[in-house]
Image (cartoon, rainbow, N blue to C red; front, side, top):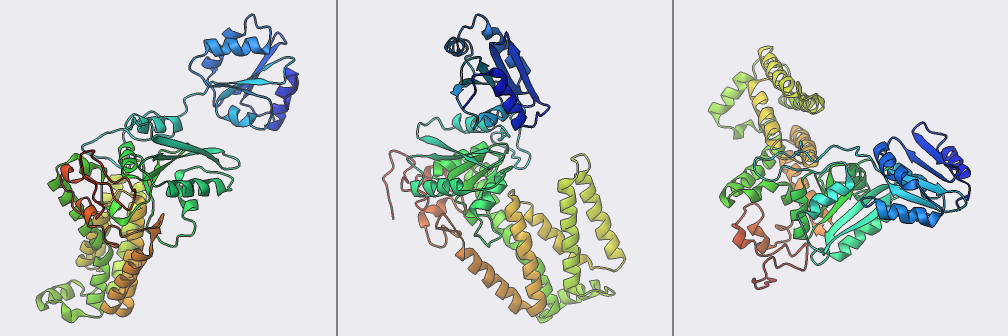
Length: 481
């Protein structure tokens, strides 16, 4: 319970935060006092709006009415306990006390600490909306609201994290989304007991804590248009305060073959791009392992002229084929990591020069053969057609497993690794939906927007495995077959 003394209240809050240097307090005529955190509040808002409202105040009620009538753009509330007071102070509120009253007034005076809406840096596109999510949670909700002006669009807020008290919003369209899945996610969020939530990656890991698969079951994106199309398909979007990346679930393997930009191009062009990504998916996983299996155990399968050419290239190389491939796979991954974490002004140049110099020097020194450089370069380029970092990491790990299996058992090991990969993909589910949907189990009607994108007039139905409200167009006859 708050004290009726302004000084007692202010001193208690200061002791609560060990008299932190960003706590600003002021007492006016021994009648009114206020406290706020300079680090997250705007001094201009406090000075321009609050101080001008403190004239001729005779009681707590008159102060509340004065603030309520003059401050139109701020959130206001009353509070009578210390329990949540520091949470609001850290959220950019100013707490106002009146001498003789054991209630306080909270007024939002939040400072703009985030960057504005800018173009996406991790998912750039040629055609389509250029805005992206930011670290500002209300602004992220607004980017979705301005695209979907529907009263059925719901945002359910949950506070997660004992110390950070991070706001996590579960977004869904009430008459489209599967409410059992929505309630399941909300229930899991409420059960999370952790000190801090700094990024949406924390939420993803905690929701997938029992998953043993390296393949992602959620899409992480900073594109509002992708989040909106997912909501309209019946998916659920999770927005986390202080991070520009939102989570979309459920996600199947085919979703990582798609790109938001596919829907902004002609169907033929989008279908070609998707088919290209499918080819790249297999190239980046199987090519190095296939080369190791053929050169190490089964050279008789290779045509004689090609085998002679490959053997001549390997003449004088001191390492086995598998060691060659593994060595340069690791080198290319090192260059990729260096490119990601280097400043923009030098990152790309450094990786290009590093790849050229190292590759050329290694070939001239006789450490590796030219064909290995070509194979590793093709596989590394193939993984770059995917924008999601999690799927890229999964492809990288399975590529190495294919190389090791081929090293140990040749083509038999290569085939065995392929069977294990297929079995693993079949066993994965997200919100009880199989990962290989719509191919396993078979949903033929959803093939119109899987590997190939049909014209928009043919996309009349939503995926039946995501929602029971499958009709997109009012004039369409519902067909559940």
